[in-house]
Length: 275
Figure 1 (spheres, one colour):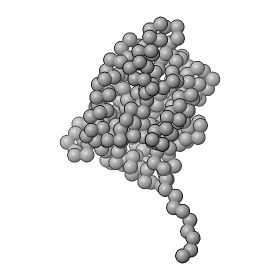
Figure 2: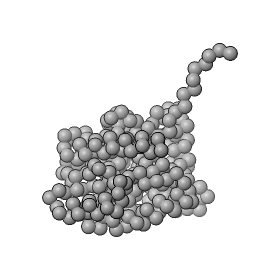
Figure 3: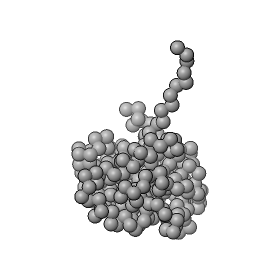
Figure 4: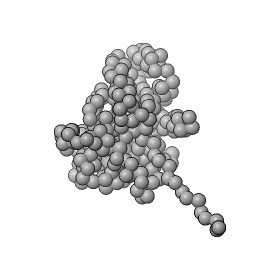
C-alpha cells in the first residue's frame, strides 16, 4: 500500500449573528468595523447584510446600483450565497449586500416549510463550495427587530454577538432577545449561544455611561467584552464616505477599539472551540 497525501478538510467558518431589536445601538457599525478589523489581522470574512436599510452595504462603499444580486435573492432561493458575494475595498473582506426588496421577503417565504432555515442552507452550500472554503468568519448584520429574518440569522449562526449602547434603557428589551435566543436554541438550532455583549457609544465624561456599564457587567458577567467602543466622531463620519472607520482613520479611538475587540473575539472563539 502506497503512502497517500492526507485529505485536507476545510475548517467551517464561525458564523456570528449581530443582533439587537433596538435600533441605533451600533450594530451595523460593529459589523462593518469588526469585520474590517478581523480581515486586517489575517482572517477571511464575509458580512451578510440582512437589514433592508442596507447600511452595512453602503458603509462598505457598495452603492445600490452595484447590488445586482442581494440577500433578498438568496432568501427567496433564486441564487446561492456565493453569487451574491462581492469583494470590498478591504482585502479579505467580502459582502453579500442588501436591498429594500428585503422588506417584502417575509411575506414571500412565510408559508414555506423551510422559511426559518433558508439562510442556514445557503451558508452550508457556500461552505461546501471550494472557492469559499477558506472563509474563517461570517458576520450577519440583522435588522433591528426579532423578525423572521433575524430568526433565519440565529438559525444559521453558531452564536449571537449583541451590541449594547451605554444608555439608560440599555437592558430594556435585552431579556426579550435572550428569550428569543432560547426559543431558537430549543426549536431550530441547539448549538446557538450568546457569544458576547459589546458595549458601544461609551462616553467617559458621562456618569450615566459608567453606571450603565457597571450594571450590564453585574447582570451579564463575563459575557460582556472587556473592550468598550467609545462614542467617536470619526466612526460616525466614516459611513458617509463609504468606508469602515479603520480605513477612514486608523488612529482614531474608535478604530483602535475595534482592533482590540477583534483580538478579543478571536481569543474568545478559540476558548469556545476548545470547550
